[in-house]
Length: 363
Image (cartoon, rainbow, N blue to C red):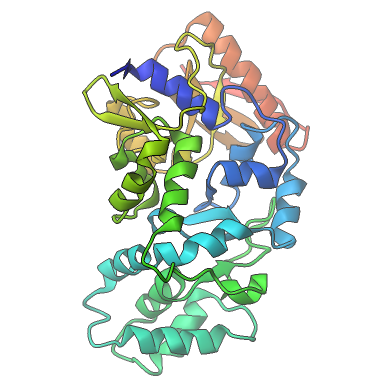
């Protein structure tokens, strides 16, 4: 069986994540291809798309949110993701059990004795047809029925797991800092979420396997689970296995992939890319060594924005006073410093509405 080394896996990830070459795709198509973007921090998807799409205009993503073609809600790993409306409706029921388990964990003792189905029903009533509500408003309203449970516990498990909801604009619009206010997903989109298959099959799980590999493969089944957080996908993998091809990584683990998906030559040039916080190009794997060294793995869950050099995390970055500040994790060569500066200038122009192209590289 063919062995793919770390560099080969890195190039495949970059190609499928639209980071090897910026793509000429509409925003909606890009969000769909990427299986959504991690959106825990509301402004970060704009940076993620700027790094992936040629000529990306922030207004294009804002328009998709306002037009209800893209939504923000809790999906993969119980984190807030930006998904197409079609994917949100199709995937939400499949995520239900995982969302409940993960949301309940931190509040299990506080919610002891609370009938979760009654809580969900009361929450639906509060959200159905009325004004959008914040999590704290929902928690306070529900605490009248369950005074022994904290309002935060009641509100968070409701909006993160029990009831399919979305965060409404202006949350998530370009240069907008509005708080999160929620409405039922079905009310916002005018359609109920797709129910599970009545025959016990798992078409959504099978679609997730294919979609994940198209955007992240080649990958192990553990990588797939780490991306979506769903435990019950072995049967879905088995159902589509005949469609797939397999490789091994350097540690002997089986890698699954789609036959016609891009697997560039490992020596393909990888340009500098600035990634936003919590980008799924890193978080979408259990084994992240294809893109980040193990010693820096903690950056991927700490919300650090990172710079890719030759396809690997080589620096962190932030912005202060319209200046992109880069903190290298290793020494840059002169050519690398020039390449990072040039891409940083482009990012500074994007973030400052063409008012600044200042870049500062520490060290």
